Amino acid sequence: MKKIISTVLMTSVMAGAFCACTPKTPQSNPAVIVNSGEPVQVNIQELSASASDKYRRAYLNASFDLLKTQIGNNGNTMISPASILIALAMAESGANGQTREQMAALWGGEGDSDAQISYAAELLRRLNDSEGVSMHAADAMWINERILSGTIRGEYVDFVRDNFDAEINSEEFSPETVERINEWVNEHTDEMIDRVLDDLNPNAAEVLLNAIAFDGSWGEQYEDYQVHEGTFRNAAGQEQTVNIMNGSETYYLENDLAEGFIKYYEGGQYAYIVMLPKDENQSADEMLAQFTGDSFEEYMNSRTAEYTVYTRLPEYSYDYECRLNDALNELGVVDAFDEFDADFTGIATLPDDANLYIGSVIHKTHIEVDRTGTRAAAVTAVTLDAAGAIMDEQIKEVFCERPFAYAIVDMTDNTPVFIGTVNEI
Image (cartoon, rainbow, N blue to C red):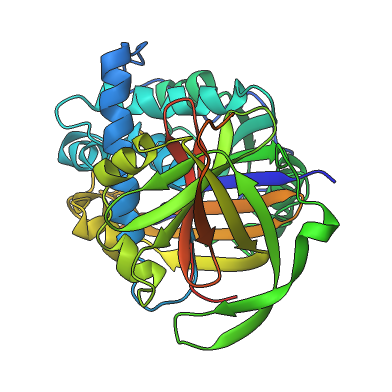
């Protein structure tokens, strides 16, 4: 059975006025693009190993900072920091001044947003260059000719096309546009996500999309005899009957807050990381509230093969949705949400003093973990509005029969693509 991790990132730019025109068929080289004005100059660069590690560490800390804004009610949570990073980087590429500085600072790009955007582009390339699994990333831009004709900056369109390999489409937005966008999403997520839009605001001017599909399964799958009915005690103290997968793993992880194990996917580049609270009375939320990107890095570096790790992991699935406006505000991205202070003139300069600003950042995720592997998806929508062998065997037991946290991690350098909690099933 194929296992798929799919990510969709969507940015909508909305303007304050539009004119009535006749819908046209999408085209790959839209005539609406102009090259006037003073566009943002983004210098994509090949990062040194030290610079790449700097932004990776900043990404780790931002990942846990964002996750903490969503936990606390002892429900299940999952975010894809990779999805959020790339979606915001595409919008940031058209930002100027303090708006751009604040967006870059979230991911460690104070004073050097070019390098921070370069890291986002580098992460996107890495997803496409993954080994041992089938990973595909695709991007697209839809331009509303009614609003952006003659105003959208050609340099910005070129940047998104050249650095995010985006497919460019231009038409007058209509209900049919929504269906075309959803068909693109369905196709590029291997039918994991069948739609991302129900409609488009009449003032929508641009939609940016990114889809990522991952096809993989456990390196060592659970056999049917290893799966049996068991009990999971949720964060409310209630017992739930679930299917429990029993196994053993090579690598054990531990810090003051949690213990866990690494379960690799085929190919060995990606792995499922468990963080089980040491305090049996703690929920996953309470434990993760004390985690940072730095402590996650230390947790990953605690890996040891000196134990045989007997494991129990429930089969589970759930959906999660959140609005990240307040979270991003708390983390310093302020001007981008202000209708007066936001500066996205690198995307377009609208007439009559209309101004682009972020109206909402919506994040949705889905995950399924079973005996064959992991299936997960994420959607981020950013709208811009106008106005091995063991010698002396020792045993560790990590039984996830109570709340725990997890991450799906690129083991090349411990970069999490998804992070979540299981407080109930």
